[in-house]
Length: 215
Image 1 (cartoon, rainbow, N blue to C red):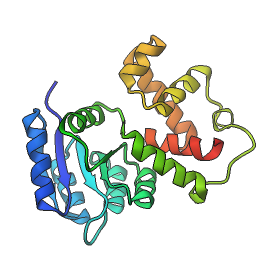
Image 2 (image 1 turned 135 degrees about the horizontal axis):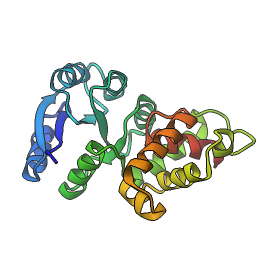
Image 3 (image 1 turned 90 degrees about the horizontal axis):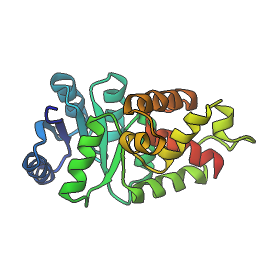
Image 4 (image 1 turned 180 degrees about the horizontal axis):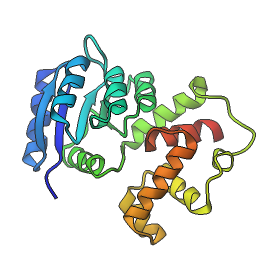
């Protein structure tokens, strides 16, 4: 399998340089960089990276707006780098379709694994980011809770509910396949069906929807 390609979007040159060193040292190909959201969108359109590693706070166009356009146009999957003081922006990125969230303090092995997972069509969620984001959703940002469970209202099959449970646990497609004793392509089909029925743009968005409506 060829090395994943990555576009780095962060307004700090030193951070981009550090990320490039970490990724390239582990066989990840960095195809370009961007210092703001507009450049990120343009470079994503020109370079078509597998993954856009996206900062949320940038001058001019922010990372949430850039994520929304990149996802809507199918220019690449977005993996967000965030800080603990960015809950509101993380929620915006979830709605915009980002498929992964990491803290900026992430170490090289975790960063590389997350990039590879996202490039392979899976998600990458730092539990600390997820807990804070979902807690904020529950506090009233999302839709009001329904009387029946989200899974029941979405008419999920038994297998799809098992897959949804795995998504909520942060399991990868490979982990789901092993635990459910089905193939990875079958897992991907079930994940796609779950997202469609929940009206979610990504695994992280699906988790936010379920947590906000059922907690």
